[in-house]
View: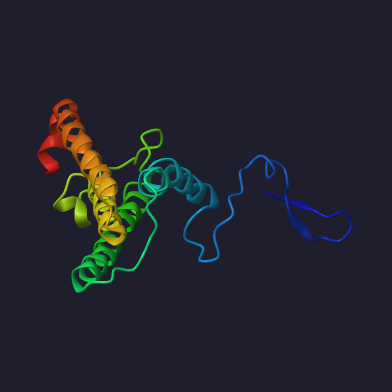
Length: 181
């Protein structure tokens, strides 16, 4: 829609209806809307951040566990392996999260689920690679800190999800069960 400027013959775009359209800003790369990014950050802050950062910090405070460098070869090997396991967990988690955003057009949060079923990448092999990534992170933290209470937390989290995921699968629609491991 254009309107003519009086006396000049210039045609200017009409501003009618322009203000009512939501204008979403994009990030510097231009690929993700700010609102989508905020949705993901909220979901990450509430769910995996609580499990992998806040609860382990509470455990460390409760049991007086401080990160220290091991003095023996075995302790250093355990801690080095822990760093690798945490890194693998982060890669798995964030690659899954990216697929949720790009292909599924949603977040990891149950209140903002993906709009499309994601069955590529790690989802071809594991029903919930984000949970697997979180388990890797928790196990790696326990190894890195050489902490039995953190290992117990990792096992509890794994056990809860080993019970929850089959229950979820039991109530999933048949077409979903056929396409997801």
